[in-house]
Image (cartoon, rainbow, N blue to C red):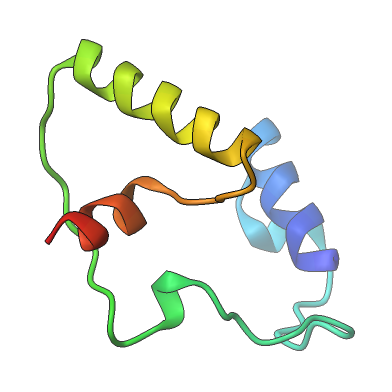
Length: 82
């Protein structure tokens, strides 16, 4: 929590970290290890361009699927299509 506060203050005030006089702690108590795609070695990050209208259509379809109980994101959709 303290690190999040430090980052927030740095963004808002744009002061050097040393000027905040808050002890740094790398240990966050009560937080589970990351389990998302970023921390999964089977997934890799990619950036690609699509038309804005296509992106909106995809988001609309994924929202419709979510309302039906199927929670997918764009990377799941690409993986399923291939």
